[in-house]
Image 1 (cartoon, helix red, strand yellow):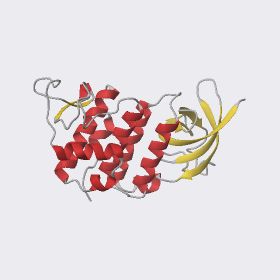
Image 2 (cartoon, helix red, strand yellow; image 1 turned 45 degrees about the horizontal axis):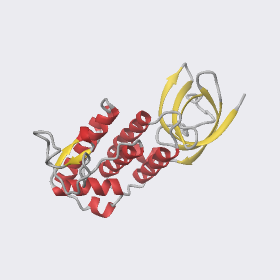
Image 3 (tube, helix red, strand yellow; image 1 turned 180 degrees about the vertical axis):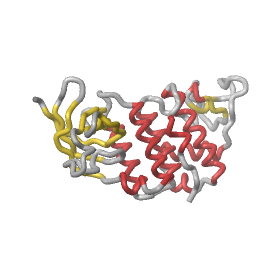
Image 4 (tube, helix red, strand yellow; image 1 turned 45 degrees about the vertical axis):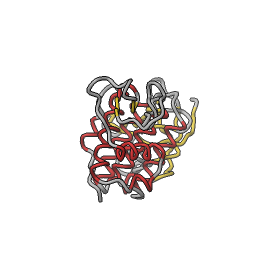
Length: 243
């Protein structure tokens, strides 16, 4: 049967029968892949813990009728252990993989894959506060999907900013002339933090205070859930505590 080999990050798994597991992965070249890992739940399985969420693997599969079959899996990035051992990192990573699962389909690929792997690696190394890493990931993932938010110029008219009215449905900040009545307003510090997270300016992001981070997180969550058209179950469990 035809086979393929690719790098992939494990998004989620669920049980199949007594010993097997269906593994959903986001791959570098083949987009989102759903495959059966046979015998993975048995003691002494040749796959070990390699096919668990947040792991990055070099995987070989052969193409089945409805689901592919995992033949081999070699570890490339063992991020799951470090992430699972810390509640804040675990909840952030769970929200990331749920978002990736919802945003990507079979034809989606490289940019989403690289973004997710980079975010999980950063979480495992505790490079930044987990909440900031998550918010940056959400904003960037939406941008890749074609929903880049504007935090400076008007998202409707293009009028140069700064503007304070933020309307999720219109794509970000809007000028006073374009803002619907009662539009929520964001203070400059929150807009600066959101722009920093989108751009990857970590010095500016880490300098933000707790109140500003909380407001920016709310904006990122609202923007994400609007464009995904339904809520992310994992977001309500994210630990936003600043270490």
